[in-house]
Image 1: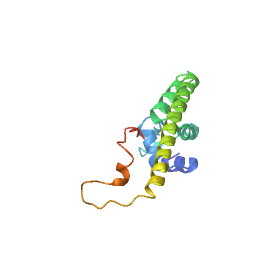
Image 2: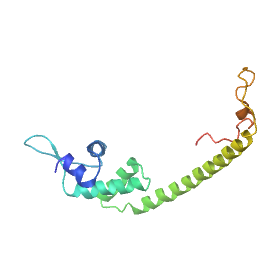
Image 3: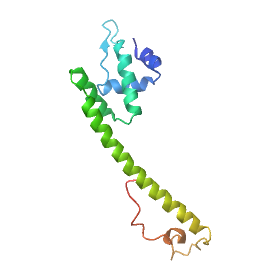
Length: 142
């Protein structure tokens, strides 16, 4: 099948299929008559797998390794579990940072409700932000 047929069958853009092909996630053959890429029926399953893995937060490089392990006859499941466990912990940390940030933002907005705007004199940049403090507690990774 052509790139258009594969993309339409799976419900992704032609550009996505081409990108996955360029990265080596899909390996179409070449039509000897015209040089066009020809995708096999197995590429439908492979493309659906790629999209499912992405929906779980796997990065394309990780998906490529998972596919390579499977293609080589090795179960990728142990590595998939390790990646997922690590990603869950990373997400928990990010959620904690975001929750703390949300709390600080809401507290600042409550405090700012009773404060006047600055006068633009240049001595104070913005009294609202300056009233919060030096920002040492704001995580830079968010």
